[in-house]
Length: 195
Image 1 (cartoon, one colour):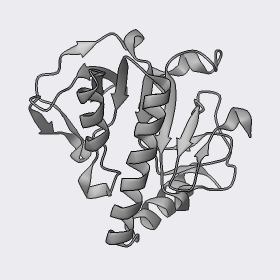
Image 2: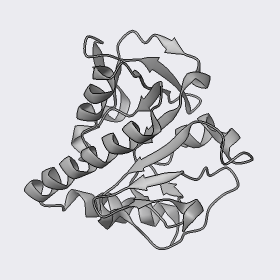
Image 3: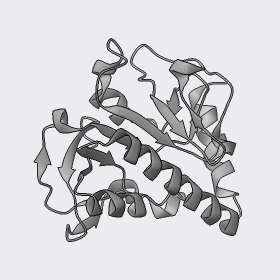
C-alpha cells in the first residue's frame, strides 16, 4: 500500500477510536514511555506537542515527568516554506501559539542545537515492523534526523508512540525515510533492530 493511502486510511482509523478506550490506552502508552525514558536516562528529550483536533497522543504527562526529573525538553518548531524543523526549549511557562494545521508551537521559540538531543518522541499515523513511520507527509523528522540513515545507532534514540491499530503491513519506503529505533504501543515496544 502506498503512503498516501496509508495516511488517509490510518487517519480515519484513529478518528474512529472509542474515546474512553483511547484515554485508557494513552495512559498505558505514557507509562511505558516514562519507563523507557527512565531506563535510557536522556539529558534532553525532543517531544511533539499533540494536535488535539487530530486525536494525537497527549504527550504533556511525558513532558511533565521529564521536567520533574530535570531533563531538558525541546519541542518542534516547523517551517512550512522549506519543510524544515528546529527544536526549541519548552517548559510549562512557555507561551504557545496554534500555527498552521493546528500545530501548537512556542510563540517566541528559543531554538537549540539539535546535537544536544538524546531522545526523540515522534508523532505518527502508521508504522511497520521495520520501524518505518507514516507521518503527515511533510518529512520534518526525516530531514532533521537524516544522518541516522547512514549511522543507525547514533544519537538520538527515535521513538514513535502509537496505538496497536496503527501497525500496518510493510510499505514502500524512499531513500530519505528514517527508521525509528522503537515504537511504543499499549501491547509492546517494537524494536526493528531486534525483530
